[in-house]
Every structure is written in C-alpha cells, then in structure tokens.
Length: 139
Image (cartoon, rainbow, N blue to C red; front, side):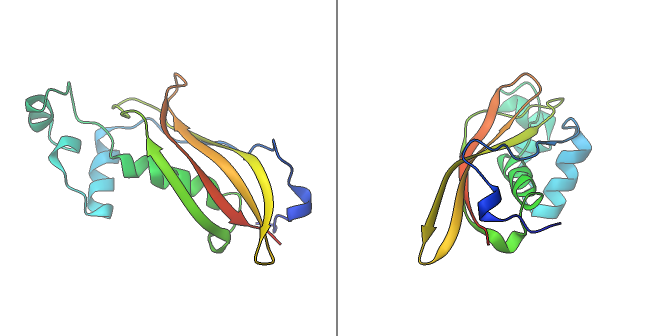
C-alpha cells in the first residue's frame, strides 16, 4: 500500500468501496467463533424465532469490523485515530454488505495532519445498517 498523503486528499473524496459476500449462516458461525460472541440471536434460529425475529441475523460488530477493513484498505491501521459508529438497522441473512466512506474534513491537531471520514455500511438495497465517522492521520 502506497502511503496516502494529506496533500493528495480533498473533502468530497470517496474511499474505494468494500463489498462483501452475502451474509449466510457460515459467516455468522465463523464470526461467533472468532469474536467469542455466541449470542444465540445470531446463530440459533429457534432462539431468534422465540425472540420474534424471522431468523438469525448478523452481529452488529461484524459490520463494524467490515468498516474497519474499509479504513485499513485505505490507510495503514496505525493511521486510524478514532472510529465512532451507530447501529441503524439489522443485517439479515442474504444481505450483501457494502462499506463506503467520504472525506468530510481536513484539519490539524497537535501538529498532526488528520482527515475525518463519514463511513457507512449498507445492504444491496441501499439500506444503512451502520453509520459513523473515523479520523485518520496522514503524512
């Protein structure tokens, strides 16, 4: 990855989108094992139905991890200063997540050049599932 420079980034620039495969039961099982989050609402259809859901659905933090991948596909992990997200919808089985970002501000803090990026994760229908912002440092 070539280092992105502060002078090369402008407000309004878009990050390369990250499109993932559709969410399936295997994805949820693998994420549960990797994260240690075995909440049955995400992996047990009977539990989900007792909770008045039609089926299991993705962990919110799985989509948050996808947003992290969006950022680290754009800048090195060491450049990420802050990520703040808000969950806005449920990611159901069959939803195909796409993560996007747009530069909304350039500024300097304590001598470090930084960029604020509006980020979101949505499904194939354009429905937002997570929205937020991240701050990254650039040279």
